[in-house]
Length: 394
Image (cartoon, rainbow, N blue to C red; front, side, top):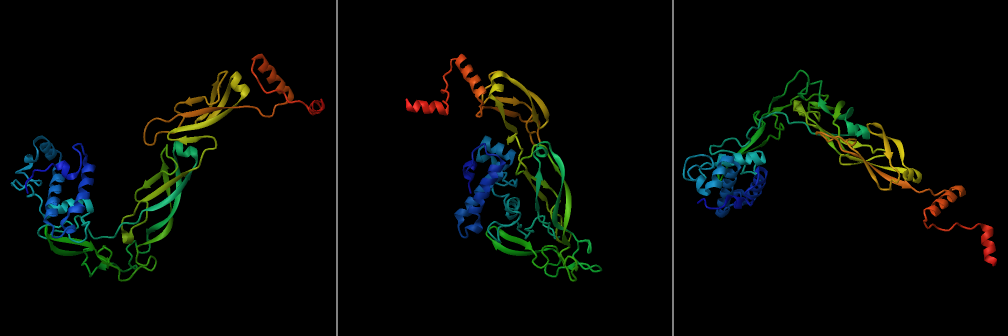
């Protein structure tokens, strides 16, 4: 096939596309155009080869530089695999395409049996696959935190009930005094292989052995304690280091603290979901803290200095005479630390001026005198009961 098309247009990406964007575009097109998904369609096969060449060229910085400078002619004579022939697909034998599917789909075809890795001579489709016990499952737990502990960080214990290696059989799954034996179904390889022909050549696919679960071994005499699993459920306690600045809903990953794998397999991870209790006086917004501070009308009018309790301790706050409701005081660096970074947010204090609603007669009279001196119009004073009765009979 002549190399004349725009590689960026073939993949449907712009010229500034990064590696992740290229990979995402190629993966989508490969699923649509792969010959196994379009049997007997030579046009789809050609398009599949074209987008594969485009991806292989653009994902390599040096080839991409040459292509950007000189166009498609720059890759003639080299091939995407560096074969030195005039065929631009000379470097894309069955093995080359298999390498791509190894990278994207873990060595297995996204279309079923034929498109895995595999070379022209029947090279293994399960690249890097080795028999052995499977890993354990990931586990989850919830850790409750006080607000201040989430802000400043803390070390706290957590207990979870998870599968742990069986101490009776040393995680082998075999009854003490016995040992696992080689699986007769897969001859100890842990996988079953199937070879078939496709338009891309001879394809080899592999799948875990169903009898031994991919371990390559069978248990003739299972351990009575763990019933051949090599693990059993127990409660374990871990110390969790909570970094400063975490928020409600954050999740911490503890590698290797999850469930033990069957028959000595590697453990999974433990994911700890954090549940932070709300603060009695402050609300969090990102790395900032917010608080509403109520001042009496007289304090706001005449000014006041008062202590205020922050998460770092008590501080003196001074409000000048004439402070208005809604005014915001910002205490810099008194908020939440930046998670895994530097610096802290701020504490923002919003003033709320309280108007008295339970005035005595003397207090009301004082306010009326004040209003008169300031020439401010206020509601008239309510008349007493006897005054209202006399007014009614006039």
